[in-house]
View 1: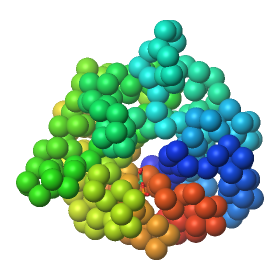
View 2: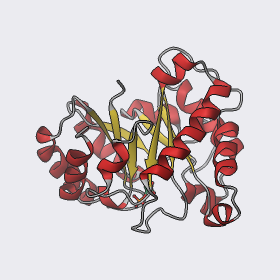
View 3: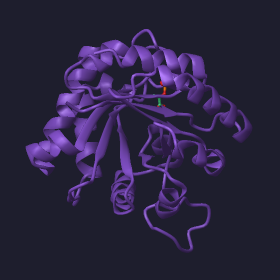
View 4: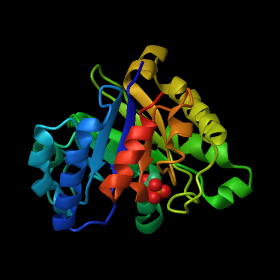
Length: 256
Ligand code: PEP
């Protein structure tokens, strides 16, 4: 059985000093987390990555970044090299978060290039997909999600050792305090799995991919999602910013 994965996305929150403080508190709490059943990933802001990276080296927690560029290095001012992220000790990278799609116009084609760049550099891409409120109102939810997954995976060959995380995050739910029902998240995880079947073998899907849910998950509702048979973990924003709340979430989310 796949280990549940719980991913903290700190977004553009917590200054490097604050991030150091919160990570220290998390590490102090982490011996009580059931990490044999659950993998925990923390994605701090870029400004904090270098300072925090050494603390992940001897810990059971994995380090992730929130974005990367699709080239490894070169004349790309302001961009984030996946190769340098790997060198820092990152194991994961979020790509295609809806906040980047909405605020910066990040496209599916760019997301697809980033997925390949992440894998080429030995990083696990966490590919975010999800419908807007309007798409949902128009009855286009499944089509919107499957279209995003399909385009993100275009031309991708999974090599042995590669891993992918697909994060279903309904855009209208993120940061709202109101998650979708586990049934709905479970249904969409099946829609995503159906698209994966168009790209990869069943064996690859079972051993190299995870489908997770994100959007207003907290310590009280987390169990409903991770207990759903087709949901392999969660992506958490707001509830990952305070060590105590996140610790409660990890503990509640690790009980199967
Ligand atoms: C996110 O933005 O990835 C997210 C899941 O945020 P929140 O948990 O705050 O809804």
